[in-house]
Length: 172
Image 1 (cartoon, helix red, strand yellow):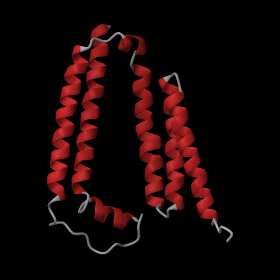
Image 2: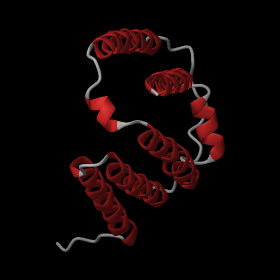
Image 3: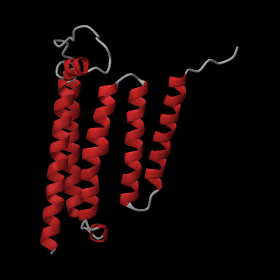
Image 4: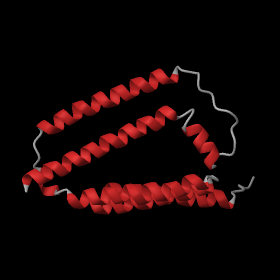
């Protein structure tokens, strides 16, 4: 009746606990920079989870892309945006941004739902999960729409960052 827990399961639980703790700390920080640092801890714990799930490529990409590049971008934006001025920002731009965001999200959901009914794309053999070949095969066949929607999301984030920078330059 004794429970037999493997070492990989214990390590996975440890990384899961670190990820949850990092997320909770991120939510409770009073400063954006403190939250960003906690988010890095969360991303690194996710990478550890991917290693325990035998997906080394995904783990490495997690560290390079999220813990590296994306977090540098977030920290850069935190450092350049004046939070005191943002607290006093007008509501008109917020309403317009919310309407545009709702339209974009609605269009994305509609396209995604329509694409779910298309059974033309069928992937070949399962392969080994987490390998470069399997990820590439699934990313550019079965999940091609998800990949394109992610590209659109990153484009919207880039335009938003440019708008914030332009607004900051107008004030000075």
